[in-house]
Image (cartoon, rainbow, N blue to C red; front, side):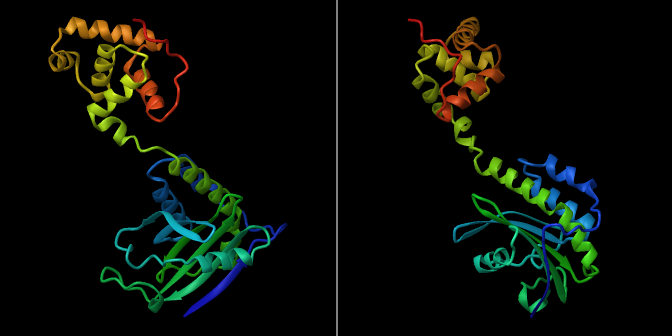
Amino acid sequence: MTASLIFSVANGDQGAPFDLVELPEIVEAIGSDSFADSLLSCFDKLLGADHCSVYRLEGFELSEVASASVEGARAVARSDLTVYEVRRQLSMSGTGLRIDVANISDDEIAQSPVRTLRRHQRVMICARRPEASYCLQIMRSAHQAELTDEDVKSLRQAAGIVISAIVKHLDLTLRRPNLTPALSLLENIETCILSSKHLSRREGEVCARILYGLSSIGIALDLGIGKESVMTYRKRAYQRLGIGCRRELLMWYLALWSGGQPSNTQPTLN
């Protein structure tokens, strides 16, 4: 059985001052793999959280896009959301942002031999944005004191900032290309570089092996040429591409691999 304590955000409703000390930790983690852990750390310090998860609702498709749990609480600290539940919460909000606190009994969540908890308190922060809706779910175990009205009013002060950080994080990570295929196989690197027509075949072969991580001696042995020749081809390639180091070569290659057109390259000289 679920007992809900509803706290809806209303315009002009001033809550208690919120301690913003922990929010920079979330902001600094935007775009990194530690973002979910930073969310959990923040709300664990503020509310005593065992688990947090982020959901994205686009149309009628709801997906969990990030989650984190304290050690030993993963199996019991989460509660699967449904499209209906998120849409119901958003429908009751006139401002596009809603906070809901509900007490959830142990027969409504998965059981775990790691930790036995009779009740959980679930905090949901749901927000509507033009491209999609988002929901942050925070689970608190039975040994934590239940949140008061003043606690939720304080939480309300940071809700908008937290949701904005979540949206920015997902915008960065969901669109971030997977670079593993681009750099994992020498054959793929070489094919991509030679397809650009900016370098001679030998210059492209040398650059491909530089990106693959081979030393000058390794490149010479692999291509059957002298070390001095490797250095000459590298110098010519860098001049044609308008670059001066391996890092710039990498940036040029990734732009080429992702379909971009590097603007500082010169045509191949025959």
